Length: 301
Image 1 (cartoon, rainbow, N blue to C red):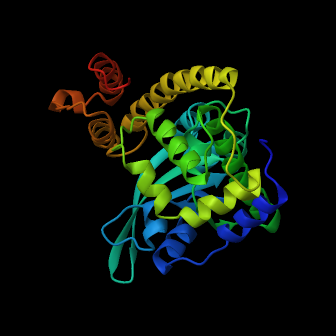
Image 2 (image 1 turned 90 degrees about the vertical axis):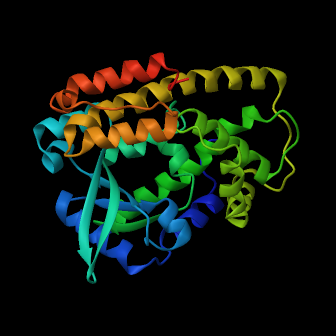
């Protein structure tokens, strides 16, 4: 089943309205003003830990038009290869808070969580808990809440063909996150997916039961597993390539983007990169070199 059940939709709607700490609320309001966002979604490690101390806040700022929000050049890149990612700081209560902010057109975001969307980067990210901290209207909030519920349903549907034996919610989500990590430039530790699920097991159990009923759940058929394995192999190749291209784009769409791209590649692929002063002066050419160099050294496998 790829359409969220009513019970799943209710769980996610309630979850998305949960209270959070003041720094996150203030940053979301800042993003609404800065980008003219019609919705701001908060997610990631700061949400899980309920603090931003020593961490980087994670947001999606959803806009009507990327060119209006970002300008013609950056906005066009955001539309062609969404989202654009920015590092932003703001003062708050006599300190500085920092965030990684993805800017994306609202319509593209809604499409990116749909079951027909092949690549996993958005629906896998927002199958995890997320809060809608800013919404221009009740209608926008309802659309964003529905999109978060759809992300959970899509994640479950995409993961089910990977299950070779009867499984419970924990096994499903560990397998799902392991697969999606493999489809990005992020070779996480083998234990990362299990840690993520264990940290909020009641939530993952509740959403699974809301969508699939009580477990245990049956293994996928042989044909289903073969089709699932093929799909995830393609998803890994396409997902890693798109992530690498987004890093190239980041190298010349915002200040400090080249260093951000290098840091991301080194962190998630293990490929070490040293940039010369001349390379820093040519971010587009350097970005392309980063992509093909990382590919040759095995960073996109």
